Length: 200
Image 1 (spheres, helix red, strand yellow):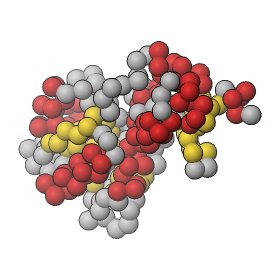
Image 2 (image 1 turned 180 degrees about the vertical axis):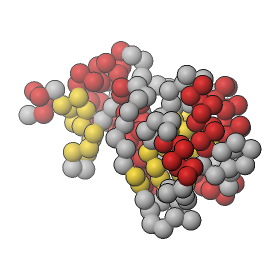
Image 3 (image 1 turned 90 degrees about the vertical axis):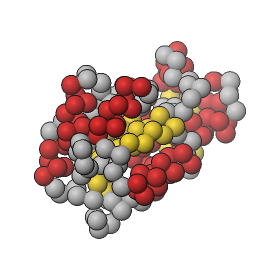
C-alpha cells in the first residue's frame, strides 16, 4: 500500500492537508506543491508535504512568473498560456524593464528571451547575478545555437524552450522548474531542452 511507504495519492494528500482533492491536483499541475506523476494521477511524499506545509509554502497566491520578451505578440501569447494555467504574470519588453519589475514584485521564475534591444538576455542575467537573487530561468529563444546562448549559459544552468513556442512543452518546463524551486529552493535542476521543431 502506498500509504505505508510514505507516498500518498491525491485523495490521501487532500485528507492529509485538509483540502479538496481537486485543489490538490490543481496545485500539483501548477507546480505549486511538491508532487510527481505515476500513471495518470499525482503522488506526494508525506514527509515532503509535511515540510512544505510547515515552511509556509501553502500559498494563497499562485507563483508569479516574469516574462522578458521584446516581441509583443510572443510576450502576450506566453502571458496568456501562463494565466490560463493559473499563474500570476509580469511582462517586460527588455532586460531593463525586467530588472525594474524584479525590484517591485515577488517573482518565482523568469522566462527570458535572448535577442532584445536596450538590454539583451545575457546582460540581464549578468545584472541579475549582481543582485544576489537566485531565481530559476527558462530561456525562450529562436536562436538556441547562437553566441548569445553560449553567453547566457555562462551564468548557470537553465532550461531551454525553443521558438516557435509550443504550449504543452512550455508548461511542462514551467512545472518542472517550479516543482524544484518550491520543493527545495532555487538551484541546479534537471536541464532538458524543450524543442518544438525548427527555430525561427
